[in-house]
Image (cartoon, rainbow, N blue to C red; front, side, top):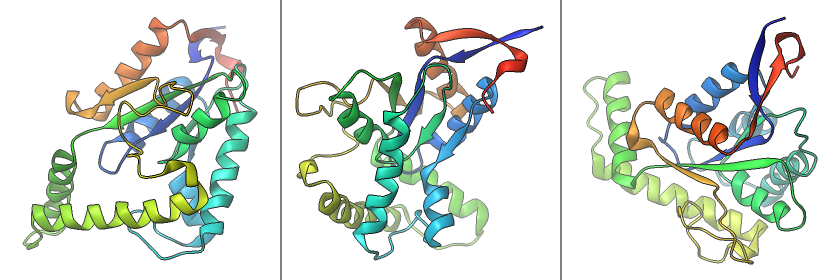
Length: 217
């Protein structure tokens, strides 16, 4: 039987838009043959709301999705790793880890705001040739969306206060870093970022060899 490697922790990926986190999560899930849960997709399937833009909604919906993520994190098992990708996922994991040790590792996919919106502008220009969208318009739209989302998040999680959720140096109430590894996505394409995550897992002894027939379902 051939063997392959998979992590001994759940991989929790968070970050703002246009950081390539979804593509990197897909690459890692395929590499390790483990489940890949995307909260944005789950949100859309349950509510019909497109999370790529802000939609006014009942905060109870966000609480339901956050409770789902927290339950997954609390019950994480080193023998059955998974990838969980969501903007609040690492923040939620930090709260759960403050209560008890858990087999999870948190990753922030990050890039400066202007770099992210330059990527978005190139995407718009590819998909809609002749579009008159400007970088400044995209920046303004992203800031508005993030501010409105934060308003709802703070209703659900008052402990957030006015902190920047995607601050690479964000810490929990006891001073522990929320993100185990910050992936500055200016380093390269999502495949390069996925390799960086893999290298960190290997370097920290968080990989195990398993038989090809025993991968997660």
